[in-house]
Amino acid sequence: MASETKIVNLAEEAKLATEGVKTPSYAFTTICKSLVAGGVAGGVSRTAVAPLERLKILLQVQNPHNIKYNGTIQGLKYIWRTEGFRGLFKGNGTNCARIVPNSAVKFFSYEQASKGILQLYQKQTGNEDAQLTPVLRLGAGACAGIIAMSATYPMDMVRGRITVQTDKSPYQYRGMFHALSTVLREEGPRALYKGWLPSVIGVIPYVGLNFAVYESLKDWLVKSNPFGIVQDSELSVTTRLACGAAAGTMGQTVAYPLDVIRRRMQMVGWNHAASVVAGDGRGKVPLEYSGMVDAFRKTVRYEGFGALYKGLVPNSVKVVPSIAIAFVTYEVVKDILGVEIRISD
Image (cartoon, rainbow, N blue to C red; front, side):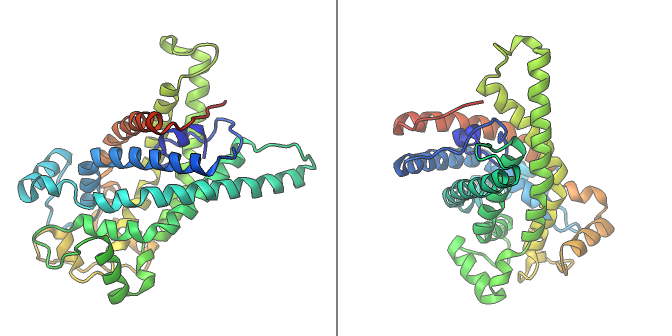
């Protein structure tokens, strides 16, 4: 999407897609090396914050009639006590498996979307030398994100189900491929895209707000220069990553209710789903939503508006360490592989 996104492969958390970077042409080997470096960095960072990610999903979908996880610290202690160390990382393998295919689709989709949008823009303006504006690059990035998310959505769907399983659940998916085949056999191919609509809709406020907040923070820092962090009207990569983390956190907060609804819709149609999310094999209320609007309505009616933000705390806590770990890891792997990093403003 942009230079910093290519550096740390963190389009989800730090949408630094506004730095005025023209779409580059990479050699195939360089692309492969970048994908490998990004995959390793993403895998390490996601594994490091996997306990917080699993707790977030458990808080989002747990049966309100049988609360097992009540807060970040208590929830992590409960997982440790009832499922042990491995329980903290349940579902992480599938989450990491999505990184490389998602990044590859996103990378090539952005290339094609940028070219298409640029051609339309040049035709409209009548200027063959026109370049993409930050807003148009943002649009290309959003398109690429939606395409990549759609292409790998079945993996995310089954990852959500694997994540909420416990040793006491009445039915166990043995892994990603077993889960995919089971869902296809028992619920049909459409089931693999349950919750897709709120995911797509969530891209709009998330990306848009990231853009606005990131640009505002960057402009404020350049103009006010607090703590003397600006040199020659330029921000360091670390400072821009910090701005991206702040913007990403705000974007996630606004779009978070759509993420909650997405996870809950993913559980619909799953045999024993109510008891699985209860965590002890005793179902209280069946999970039935006719669609996204119905899921919003029932969630607010039966659990209150605050239910739309269940799991927000662990989700916010993991943003900064995830970005920092991914950045450092990417730098190390990039040096090993000899990947050339291009940064331009």
